[in-house]
Image (cartoon, rainbow, N blue to C red):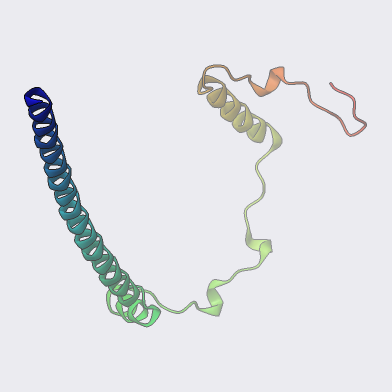
Length: 131
């Protein structure tokens, strides 16, 4: 009987230690949750304050006043608008082709690994045939 009493007492002490450890860990976790909730609340308040500040800074009337004060902008004068007759002529065709070739050459050298240049992809004509 004595051994049985010792085993039962040892089991009870072990169970009490385990319960105390679980209670201590749950208290620590509850404190951690409380800290996180407080931090989340502070962050939400900060976000709300920043949104209010952004709304104030983003106000179009405020931006208009700042633009008038700091930028040397003037309203457009109707005399500044010109007709299409005064535009320079289009450059000759060879210059356009040279520019297109230069752009194509620069694109070929900048292709990432595993891609195919456009010249190697067959083009589809309007009738559905490939060239």
